[in-house]
Image 1: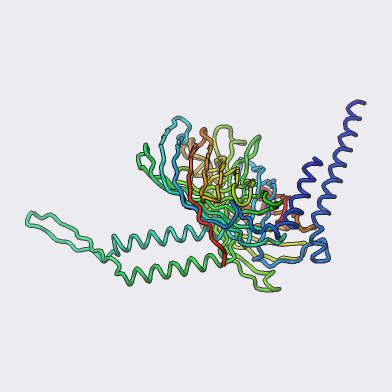
Image 2: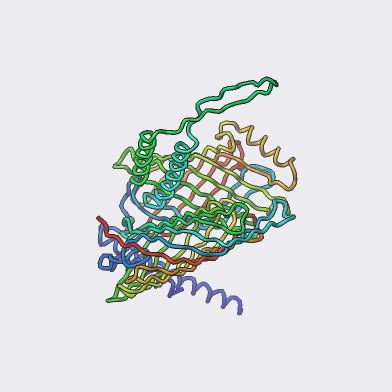
Length: 313
Length: 218
């Protein structure tokens, strides 16, 4: 009886909390109503600056005997804003500066000549030519032009952090998108190409032995933005897994990792295909569901899904 | 829960309602800024072998130069002010075999609260972060920044960011800074605490004295 009363009280509290949340959500949508005459947001172009910040739960089965992986974490997406530009711009400037330094000190390799002394010893002489001041100036100019192009392009970044814990995997997924093209509907429908790195790891199914999901990929994404619905179909060819073009190699790599030194992890290197459906019923709130086919195999054991809830700013 | 809801309610409301008037404030101080400063600190790096059998530990005293830049750059789809901040630090690491260290940090700023009452200004930012450093590699994360100012004299600025590295390790980065505008100077204390039981765990504490170079937007 006591526990039933507690249960009822608990449900009342939850209902009260839900009421508060709905009140806040409604009021938070107020500015949208005032600006656009509707509580739902307008359809934004793919390059519109925005930030999605939220929690993520994910279940992924890769079709291997160790079983599925569950993940809890946070996801931060920056779209069309400054951090992605600055990060890529900094890397570009570092690489450009390093190549300029090499050109002005070591120089460009121009070939080798060989000679032999009277004792029969063979000597090799490498020839390098340092860049002229004019060449260095041209190099600097093109580097600056490249930097300006990066800083004015609509870049995006995506970060997912997974915390591990009881039976969960820890890990990171980091993506930078330098290339977004809005083709139709005033830039609301188009595609983009990104660079991504994902590392997930856990011990849950294996005791002491670690397993890892590794993906260095070039995600290709078709996207369509509607006012309260956004769709994204994405394929992530995995460089570690032969760009997804050779399913047998993924299996062979997995088998090789299983039979290798037990101190090294078991590795999965698949190239997933996913469809993400994002709902924005109110201006500052999003709900996203993503279904994934992790590996080309006619089995339900290669499927996964993710659920996200967060704020869009 | 109610207080949390009220906070969530107030945050975008304050930002949308007041930041147009308080546009004089920036991610770190009174104006957009660039700063150059000196860094002195401690850096400890622990690395455990992959089979977990051995731990190698390196410690160093670091000295270096730090260059920073911060600016509000745009408004988001929610009309919230947003910007970027960028830090580069590099220098000499006394005690390391290769006596060099470097960090590169990029922070986005989403100004949930940006208000001003007379001489008092308060800012609360969500801070997505991208970090590279020579001891932990590439990491990214999310944090918060809270800044209180007495315009135009003093600013106290606190940042806390949780980071995850590409080695799937976690760390916590914090910074506390006092900005004295009339003499264009900031004094800062930063720390980074990694996971010593994992690969690439690192602990760093540094003290920064910087000259701030205010500039006006075109």
